[in-house]
Length: 144
Image (cartoon, rainbow, N blue to C red):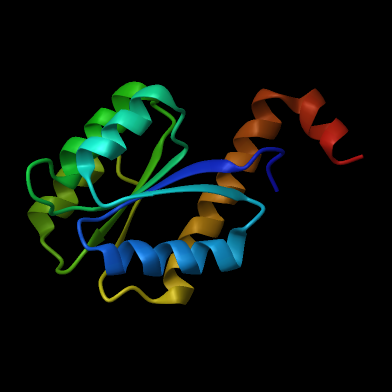
């Protein structure tokens, strides 16, 4: 477990998807994640502009600014941001472009609780490994 909660942004233009993802993650990872949810991409961009976003869970296709634009924006602000895309359909062009730009994972809608939790747990574990590698003294003190 990391010593601080991962700042996690949930972004989808469908409020039902946002509520579902937030409910699942709050129930499974209440101590590991600091959740911030948005249905408006401009609000999400404002939040990311002034905060460190560790994990972005975003719809890939949204009006005005799509998920790919959000990935590039979040990575520009913090290269360590991990991005998981939600999509209603698998499109290899989108998948390839997203991976080339640094996306970590994809989840197909409808979202399955177990798949979402497995992917998020992988990101929590990865963040803990990075933290212990970068700050070994703090990591060893947190375990005591």
